[in-house]
Image 1 (cartoon, helix red, strand yellow):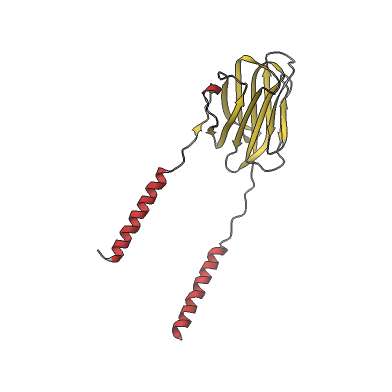
Image 2 (tube, helix red, strand yellow):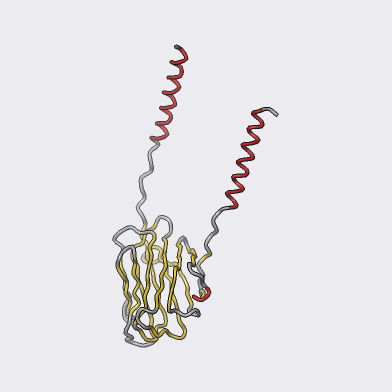
Length: 219
């Protein structure tokens, strides 16, 4: 075997090993977010991450809520743009003391989208129940507050955020049955296509280098 053939064999072997190594260390894919009846909070180990329709949801921690409370996810369209909703439901009702129920998570929008607005909603079995479900959108620096049986609180993003962290707090309410949060999206304007100047510059440099070598050889 010639030296050239030996070198090719070594390079081929190294490339094969590199591909095998790359295949072996590929990151694990996050599970799809469950739909329908969803899952129970007690079945989750935090941080818990799932994906749906390009969204990535990570639950980082919660307190107060029961392990039997059900959690579900849905991706839909609001105003012609994508939207994502999570909800937590209790069949027995939460008797909430101030600040004892918290729910923290991070959400990342699909590629090419940023957050347009966030809204929070809550449901109670007691008409006119006093209390609120407050969710702080950390990146935007404002809170969406929903008062049970009345209205839904919402905030609008003034800056471009494709990933944000949210901190929810359920407080001072009677027989709360469910809370949820919805984020709507907006498209991110496309940026201009880079010009091929670097390639042209490399070609010109190569030509100049070749002419210089010719001149040196002629001396």
